[in-house]
Length: 248
Ligand SMILES: O=C(O)c1cc(C(=O)O)c2c(n1)C(=O)C(=O)c1cc(C(=O)O)[nH]c1-2
Image (cartoon, rainbow, N blue to C red; front, side, top):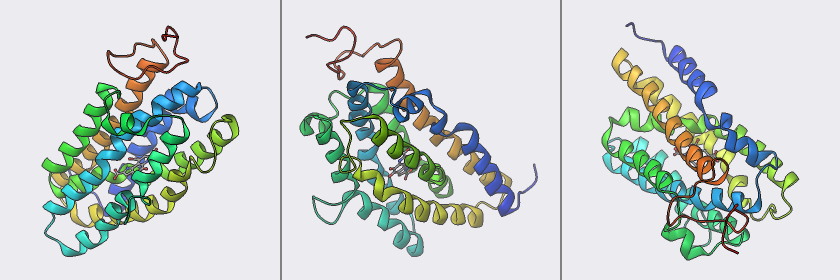
């Protein structure tokens, strides 16, 4: 296998996103086109909390492993973006505004007690990957963010249009994300293009992006199986009031 040029590597990475990113998942199509009930939107928000909670942990883990001060300096803005400088700003706080706005109890959301097991496991698999794989792969696994601005734009427009229980305030989390995702993914892409210079490293980076697409896909598969079809909610997990067969 021969070495790819940096631009060939980028083209391969973009092709992986075009094929495997979670914008193709049927649950997202339902969510963005008004096909979800209020209970299904609640289930999505409370379950995605598992991912939100892990992101700053994986960013801290990545920085802890990194001996390059330039990378740490660039990467730390991700931690601030999510954790905030105070309890009221930052992505974590904004995600909880979304779950508040959907009428979910904060302690229940934060505890993850009623989250789907597969959701928690997928989020932890991402954390484990970043802790254990070579740094260039750990950085490469964040490259799904190359593709998130487009899906976030579609989500915000679609949800505001279709759901009267969703407001711009409850979706404030997403207003902040696209420019930050663009900044962060540009940095990560430049890093992998510069540092993945052998066939093995280049394959590792591509596999890291595939792995991350799988993490995101598995989370949506779990949501779809529990709350759309066949609608099998695992024992102990959140049962929306409008779920078929929910206790009245
Ligand atoms: O709403 C989305 O579809 C979406 C996707 C992704 C992604 O592609 O991993 C992230 C986010 N949102 C996001 O909000 C976020 O903070 C984020 C951080 C990361 C990462 O891997 O470091 N991905 C994502």
